[in-house]
Amino acid sequence: MELLIVGTIIIIGFICGLIVQRIGLPKVTGYITAGILLNPNLFNIIPKELIQHDSLVTNISLAFITFSVGGTIIFKSLKLMGKKILNITFFEAELAFLFVIIGITITSSWFIHIPGASWLSTFIPFGLLMGAMASHTDPVIHELIGPVVSKLALEKAGEIQVGEKFKK
Image (tube, rainbow, N blue to C red; front, side, top):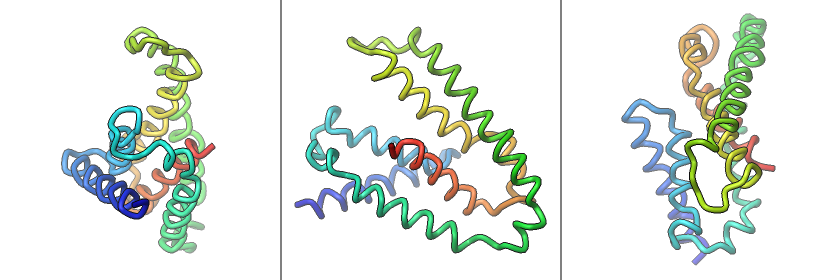
C-alpha cells in the first residue's frame, strides 16, 4: 500500500509540475502545489503516518536532485563565471528570498484569516514558502540564464534550495 501512495505522490507531483510549466511558472511551484493538495489535513488521500515518517523519502529525493545537479556542472565554465555566480547567489537570489520572507511574514496577518493562525504555525512558514519560490523565480536570475548556467541546472538548484530550506 505504501508503494501505491508513494507512486501517487510522484505522479501527482509530476503532473502538477507539467501543468504549471505550461502556464509559465517553474516546475517547483507545481511540486509545492501538489504537496499542499496531498496534505492529509486537506484531503485524506495520504495517511498522516506516512507524512510523519517521510524523512527517508525526502532524503532519497534530495539525493537524486543533488546528484543530477552535480552531473550537469561544467567546471571550466564555472571557473570563468565564478564572480558573476557569486554575485547572483549572494546578492540577488538571497536578497529576493529575504525581502519576500520579511514582507510576506509581516503582511500575511492582514490577508490570511484562519482560525487559530499564529506567527509560528502560519505566517512565518508561509513567508518561508513564498521566499523560497521568489528566489527561484527572480527576474534578474532568469535574465542571466544564458551566460551563467543552463536552464536545467537553474531549475535543479531551485528545487534543492526549496528542499533544503524546508527539510529541517
